[in-house]
Image 1 (tube, helix red, strand yellow):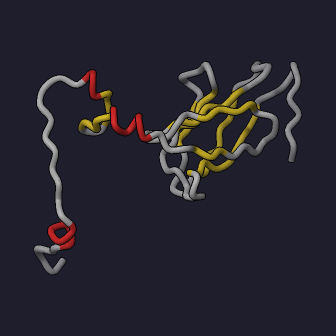
Image 2: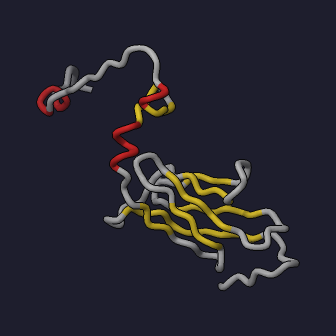
Length: 129
């Protein structure tokens, strides 16, 4: 199953898993070809990914990033490449989730509302459904 990389390499297919330090899958982590913004995939519900790299890359390198984790990277030396992401508490403290995106706290303009729901209210059901 090892994939030989050479100067005349064809299209390279790489797959693997992305997990956190506790061994739990990281869902929705971005796996991209380093130096490229157009060749990337996102991990599935089990933290699995499968990416096809274009031909012509002499020493391909994959980068994996996800909100709340430090970015990891590794050279592609085989067809299976697994990653373990480490939490980045500093990044979480500086990030504000806005709608469907996120931005740094320093880039945010306007007011921010924070809603805290205690456990009893969160568990309360308002209908039989």
